[in-house]
Image (cartoon, rainbow, N blue to C red):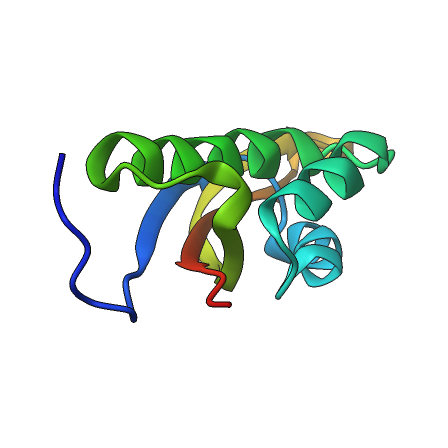
Length: 120
């Protein structure tokens, strides 16, 4: 177990190439930004959006990183920063009338969570 000497400790977790639009994921992320770990868990569990599941898994992963790597308690964590960036686009073709092909763009996104310790 490592000892904590830095009060500005940041725990980071990231998930790449999620098959969702970054705009739709940001709608959910904006609701949990700056909240404690437990509050964010409750919000994500009861929101009806598809983007909640990968964010919830990533939040749990960041908390597990804090517990395993630094021996921190999950109740002392809060979301210091969370960002959603645009990923690569999967390009597909949809057949249309008279032999034409219309492009379909399937967006992906990258989510990064940075957690900190609640200082009392």
